[in-house]
Amino acid sequence: MKVRRLGQTFFAEVIDVDLAHLDDRAFAEIKKAHLEHGVVVFRDQELTPEQHIAFSARFGPLQVHPMMQFNLEGAPQILMVSSDRHPDGRPKGIADAGRYWHTDMSYMPEPALGSLLYARAIPDEGGDTMFCDMTAACRDLPREKREQLLNARAVHHFASRWARESKGGMRPQQTKEEQDRNPPVEHPMIRTHPDTGEPAIYAGGFVVSIKNAPEELLSWVNEWVAQPKYVYRHKWRLHDLVFWDNRRVMHHATPYPETQRRHMHRTTVKGNAPYLDRQYLARELSSTP
Ligand SMILES: [Fe+2]
View (cartoon, rainbow, N blue to C red):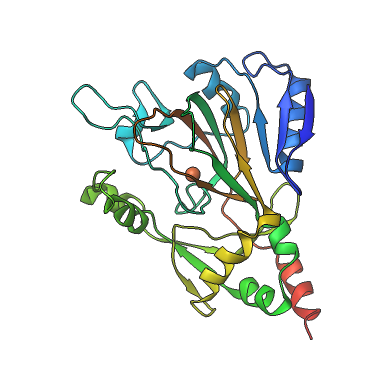
């Protein structure tokens, strides 16, 4: 197995590994690379849905996406991000998923640890995924913003974001039951990574409001993290599997021509309730004159 950093501060490529047949030693190396680089892309994988699920589940329990009609029949742990349609015209998956900076399922009390997106069909052009390193962006925060973010809490809400996206016409509207399934949740805007101990900014497109800080902090954060030095743009190859750490990075899908096909399978590993290490907070605030 070879691991090679592609981004400036994060994002690595892993080659010469077969995720369908992985011994414990190789798995431990992968786990280490994922924590170190935040995002890893495994090239040239041949995975059935069962193998994709089995590999993902080695990292923890899987989360089933709340929009059940877009999950694979018989294997609801797989969400389809796809331009494909059923014979009756209904979309098979979410074709326009995540075309804004976000971290997956941040609207849950215990959001995703990581997402594993596997490319089964890709367009000739477009459909890239951008990632940004929220740990590096957090490290460089100007003192005043850091202080604001340390005290701030963000309210995340799935239905609000879905309603905004479905106005574009590519998505069905949510039923009342779907809207009520995920009530708004509150998370700190800087969270401590449970495995590395590193703080990272935590925000993204499911945030509807913030508490204990000026509202304009949100748009400031979105611009701050999207600076080119924090961003890596991934151009998909067929049979790439990209595994990102939702506790460290945000991601942003880009469009592709409607005449082209893009078909991806995603699994999502459940994570912890975001928290901020209080000792870290006390230290940071006391070092602020
Ligand atoms: Fe996403």
